[in-house]
Amino acid sequence: MLWLNPSPIPEDLPAAYADYMTHVPLKESPRNFLNKAKARILSSYLQVHYGQSNRTMTTDRMLSSILYCFPGHRVDADATAFGLKAIPGGKLLEIGCGRGTQLSLLGKLGWITEGLDTDATAVAIARQQNPSVHEGDVFSRAYAPGSFDAVVMSHVIEHVTSPLPLLAECHRIMKPHARLAILTPNLESWGHAIYKGNWYPLDPPRHIHLFTPASLMHLCRKAGFHITSCRSTPRSRSVFLASRALASNKNLPVSTTIRWKSRLWMECMENLECMRLFLKPSCGEELHLIATRN
Image (tube, rainbow, N blue to C red):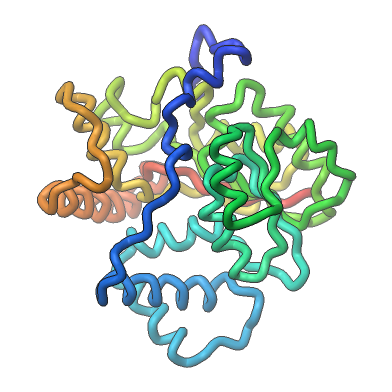
């Protein structure tokens, strides 16, 4: 694994997030035909594969199959649900839920959701959609043992100064056989090999620990979890564009200003990485781990 040395002291960490992306509400895409179609296809795919009901409409099954033609976007959809199929009455906690966008989608799939974030601005935005979002960390909430059927974290563990105690606390508050899902940058990725010190997910001082598949699995095992799967995926196509900007000493691109040539280049890089995964399964930009509580 890789770690930041010296590590920021906890009192200084808020300064690193003063202008973080979660402070801005996510803008809705224009309501044109193409975006409506994309949203309908995504909704169908998520309901077919991750919704709690096993009875889905024929239309949904047909629309969901379209994503198989676009492997990068299908990986995005899988990550949206953390690869976890909702269970009836299942309680899910998202640690580091940010603006609450992903938490809202998980609720639509059938989970009873609750969110945590230490950032007061992000929590205020998230509460506009979901009142069960709380400010603080998992330790300050002091949940009872066996409170949740699933605990999920999307790009959180790399920000944590002490990841092992965090995972141990997750283990304590989960029910037997409950599932843990983690998304985090992959230190063995193709992007890191290409851009080295300009690889965007290094992101000092916010990213304190970065993992390989082996080190992430080892950490989870130490916390008492049984690893179900740990794979790398080509998700986060914007990593290539941001890393290229850093390498060229240019300003980081804003999503609303990315030109069509750059978007096409990102799609090509993501598809190339999809093909590389057949030869080297650990080269994807993101790690997606699922584990169960023993």
